[in-house]
Image 1 (cartoon, rainbow over the protein chains, first blue to last red):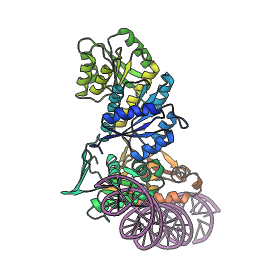
Image 2 (cartoon, protein in one colour):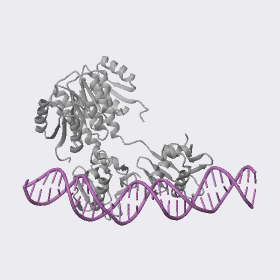
Image 3 (cartoon, each protein chain N blue to C red):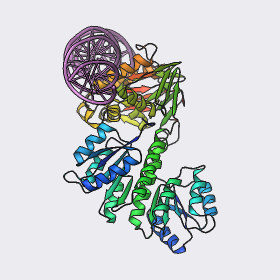
Image 4 (cartoon, helix red, strand yellow):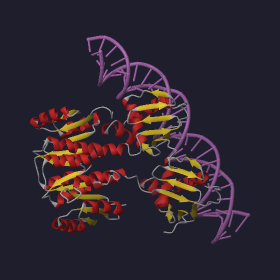
Length: 234
Length: 234
DNA sequence: AATGCGTGTAAAAAAGCTGTAAAAATTGTC
DNA sequence: GACAATTTTTACAGCTTTTTTACACGCATT
């Protein structure tokens, strides 16, 4: 996913600005998904798992501040706010609610692109803060290349399997609750579906463990969640 | 914990803005260190290890862009750029060089503070979680990883066993009454079931103590409750 | 010595959680 | 529009944990 284009969700109701962003950002190698309302925006963020969100503060119905709060309940995706309002209070409120940057219309596309790069740089730093390659026993996961190997054998993972494994690696050694995993992998509307985690954990074990009935990497913490074994830092 | 003040290095040659920042930021609980040139700024950053840097782009001698590049060779401390220049190219150059934000003078102090909070929030996310390991004799509990070891041996605890031990650790050295423990572990509807505490305390002793009939860690305070031994000074 | 109280063990029954398989629905691709 | 891959739904067997139940111990008081 890192070698591919960065994915951006744009939440904006003004069709003119939408068109402007679409052409500018596509020309600069981003994949865009658009939403015209706050609700739709939340759905897009949950399903597309974007690398960045561009949010207009002046939305009908569910307003921009509410969107920021909702997203921050489960995701740390960078959010850049666009607004016609240049009042100090709007800026402060949005930034303190969890937005990462705030641009006042009219803005220049060059500056927007530069600020997008800053935000994505931040997120990347957080991602591979540990390292881009996770190793534990025979298991090796190259997060930059999206490559998983057991011993010398390369293993193919489906998108969800890979996201699940990534989430565990980001918290290697720590227990992740079912809820945390569901939020991270499936999004906030799935927090009830504990079964999914079990099913996919089983599939990961089939693919990664020598003996899936006696796992060495993907450990169950009954009643709590799962943990990826991590010999470092004991 | 955020009990300590955040440290900010300000690199700025205009004495008027210096004074303005000094009063505003001190009033908001930051420790300030000032530098009037780029070289001096680099020294301050290296020695003070600040949580944030505020940098004026229009410096004499070593200019702002050069400072950003130099700092980014070895540090990822957040840098907020101030500038009288509002040209798009300056912004883009500074941001792409590694700055985290860019404000054009004149700026409002409220917005600056909000953007400082954003940057420090980012940096905090990057830092690893706090020291959360309880140690006493052979017993070791890593609260962040939910990992319990006795000597070299890892011990598996059920959810309730772990919650009980956590509650005792949070009050290490002090007596906790049956009532307190029941409230903490089982919730307010279970306050009558004194028995549960005894049963689970017994199970914890079986798992953690060398001789469960003569406990070293999980001590009974007859008629009152239980206490976790704690040799460290309070 | 017997009683009552607080305490510690053990082992059942009940409740809840986990792992697997496989069918049905969905998605993406040509 | 058909095909392959993947995700979601469904069902069930097996296991772990919690709760319930029963009983033994020590110790101070009667």
